[in-house]
Length: 214
Image (cartoon, rainbow, N blue to C red):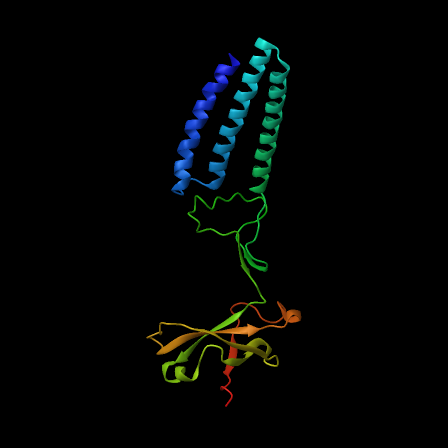
């Protein structure tokens, strides 16, 4: 009968979910596959409960069982709604930061599967244009004059009349032997009204290091 078939499917979905759950723990399957197997199993549980309650109503005719069957039906409908919401969420792309898209690797309507590409694929390249840094190399003979927190002036070569303030944010721990220099990073202080107006990633700039006062 219908209840027996539903219970048979429940056993099958339970085994499927246990298998997918083990694979998900090892990151072999995607979160979408895991949630799909889980939702199918939980939905079938509710279906079995609804059918069992319906059988009880037929056999006993008690009002309590009718209420349980109605509640199970409601829960089944709610589970279907949650499953639809989950599928809809997978269609919504959320950026990890607030920023500007510099490059798109996919267009509207394209089908992409980052899991199959082992996470090496990205939909786009983004950057926070208000949080830019200059990477440069300082010769070993001069590195003793540079320190973290040191104030700097930055002139973008594309806009030489514009001068930005900044400071040394990091001196890398490993030198570049081929250049005889150490990589240094300078954080630029960009006024809010100029974010995204003049400075762009990969632009060239002239950095002047200011001596420590006193």
